[in-house]
Length: 252
Ligand code: NI
Image 1: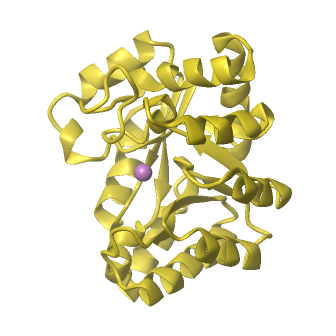
Image 2: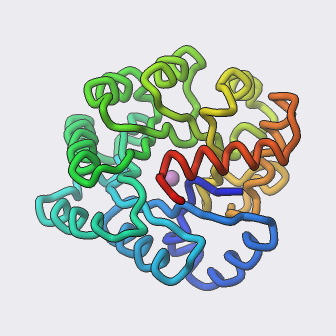
């Protein structure tokens, strides 16, 4: 199985990363896509991917930090993107919930990530919160680039619009939360062949670990929930989502 979105480059994993990776391996996690959120964490993702066979890197600047995307950062990302273990660009997108960067800056930096993805011939990892219409509009303008909507929390109607454009949807711990029946019905409506699973660790630990630091060994909890929703076995969820992840990120 794969964890398609993790932040093992976060400082919360600084002291016990070897143990975290060991537990992931013991849980059957064969691959982890480690996602950058600024220049420093993107560098760290590449460095970790060099050191660990099971890790892959995604490089980019999170919408929270969009204001840090200067020309120098952009050219550093272009260089990092040449590394053979860099499998996508991101995470990028729009976050109007926190508004840590001005919306106009978020939008222009989001578009810049598409340019970078095109240049590197890689897909894009998208974060969207309280910005559904604007996110979709920019994705639609760039529909030659493949996208994953990470930690999806939008409507089924919007998910279907992304699916129509050929994109994939990734679900995380929130589908296991007690009060998430709306999100569960969205997950049930996305075909398994277009679904990825992720932890988004260290954030959003699934039930029964909710509130604790999340880690890749918890990704089976997301798979169990999807298995229940789709009426299939957990093994089938792991098999399908692992194949989808390899295909999306072009991992052989
Ligand atoms: Ni993330």
